[in-house]
Image (spheres, rainbow, N blue to C red):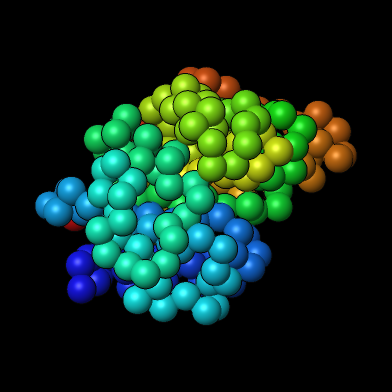
Length: 214
């Protein structure tokens, strides 16, 4: 079985997305790139995460063709492929329909630095214009909007988080959802005071040495 470890991670993190409230049912998708094999493991289309097994994960090549697996790959495979092609630092992608991040996306708002933890993405979370799910236009909008950030809101849709591995990508998605919730709640009470640009530079630098280093 190709990329068995990566398949296991997608199954595990799909369940974590549900348990963490980052999506429901079969919403969203996950993928992992194996640079060694030049192949991508991606969640299957339209399957409830509680039903997905290792055998259901699909292996595709850089052109989106199925290499191994009986299921249809995620309908959003196109933007996964586009992100891996555009950013050499990305090895994992988590796409969620998390409630607060999606609320901002439905307002067509970026997520500004209302809390320093937005630094998991960068100095903000940008917004990609709306396009139909699974379309080439959506992939183009994501690439044009994400730049060097680790997350991007998809207008009227959800959130995409990227990283060096699945743990990093999932952490980005979780932290962005937390900050999005804080922003929504702060906006309901008044006008949030944002962290200034100089402080966000300091925070981003400190994040480079935060936690247990390899």
